[in-house]
Length: 376
Image (cartoon, rainbow, N blue to C red; front, side, top):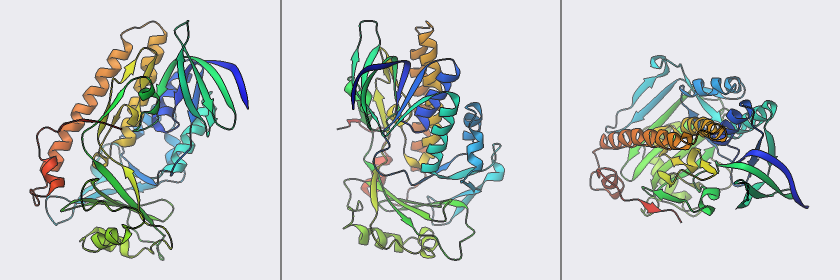
């Protein structure tokens, strides 16, 4: 159904993941009228580990209780990195306590449901298209979903993920630093279920492996490598190569071996590159989450950064609507500071693995600087 400009909002948030929900929650609790638009398309995120530090951000959003329903505590993070030996960092050493293995689709639904109870208007299975400036300095955007309609808003928030779909239509560029991809496979529950509640990372000559249990009893396997290496299998033809590489791992393979393999379907691919948006905001719009800055999953900072940037973007938009012209600039500086800290830690972590210095994957990451490319 197609309609005219049927509603007016202070802010339309494109993207119903953690960043979008955080921005919408901050804004609605500040008294703004907010529409959160969730496309709900594509493969659902399978699972992700949430660091314990996220507890503080979730508490500030009134969302801490979602972690008690359907998610699995993560009691340690183990890695074989720079050495074949497996080291472990126990959650007892973290002042925030343990992290979580998320049922990610459930987590996202819980956050959107909470936002709705806080007063956020929610449009599901819908995308934001065709942003057009209006004479009053706001926007008219088209919503495409079960029904098609136009709405008016004063500001836009792009929380659409790595592609930054909305910001790119407004002239922004996504700049990438590498070609990292995740090739992932979800294994069926084991019988009897293993007692393991840890994440495990293991480096290899052409990339690195990650595995973790999921709250559903399944196990997530992920192989991280570059798109242009021989170690980047396709789907489904590359399943044999994926499993062959898994078989020679020292730590990840045995954890996977107790789980039945899926009866059908091979590993899937997903982008995992580091990226930033240029610029992060413009006149009447702002980006948050992976749309603003995206990190290598090795950092385990994806959802944490999404929540942080979502909160800060919401605060910046509220302040700007209240007349504080410098608020977006403060947000830009905050995102830049987070990214600089990430880059320092990223370089240090990859520098710690020196067993394969001549392999392209590792040689690239041992460079002190890396060129940026425009995302296509």
